[in-house]
Image (cartoon, rainbow, N blue to C red; front, side, top):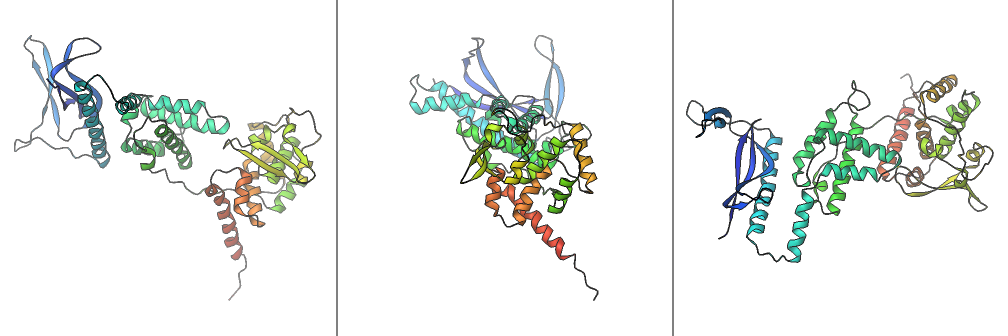
Length: 412
């Protein structure tokens, strides 16, 4: 006799309906070995009808509770107006639950001999029961440098939002819309007083989308969920940079930290970031008669090999050559103390802009574009993955040109 499997609902606390499978005739529970008619799916729907708790005594005289619908004046159940997100949640969950019901009914009534396709489907089902948050954590551990830091931050927000547990077969577009809204309103992990910036939310949500893309390749997801989820919109940020005159003023101005000064000017002449300069070793500096000085290295942000020519002026900032495995800028550290020296040096040069060390990298990119270097070359030398990232500097150049037109004012 074929076993029928029905999808049913049971009222629970919090205005929700728990979903469970109802078997007829009963089946043997693999955990207890006893006959059972119910298997709860750990899924729920939001109630569209208002319920209240009613207490009663069972046949043994033990007090029990049940949920009964609240009736209106006409004797009909009172309706609850659900939000669009709650309605979408119900729709997504019902679709998933129905797929589970069909698979369960099929597996219970099928012969013991499985086809290759059916075995693959069982593997997909097993993967769907795995924890997405744990999968994401494993991806974090495979990252390094600043990329690891960004992935780890994204993981901490995902862990906090899910409580560390979210199965692959529970992932829906609605869930990620809710997580996106969480990021846009969450407090920063660095300061309880400040909210997470929108561009940080952009970065963290993109890491989650990247994880979904990889999960689809690894067959933990039966459809490309990432492709159906819109990213967080990025906002334009103002990037300060220095002019040639300001750089020349800095060269003439004494800095209490000469090592920091050399490193900052080296960044302005190469476009290299602080971490790259800090980790630069003498073995990385190469020379040939045809190409001069160059730096073949792996970009920390992208993990890709990159070839970076070094100008003669930049090479003079490196100092005396040492052993191959020695750091070129030995002793360079990022700290509040070094930042204080940087700000004092900038101020002593008469520069009132808010300049950080990273602004020297912005300076290189902006000056290169203003001097006519094509944006593709600048993008490759910066080690950007996407040309859109480099286009931010092109916008700065456009703004500078617009500002220049306003400097000539005639008295009509």
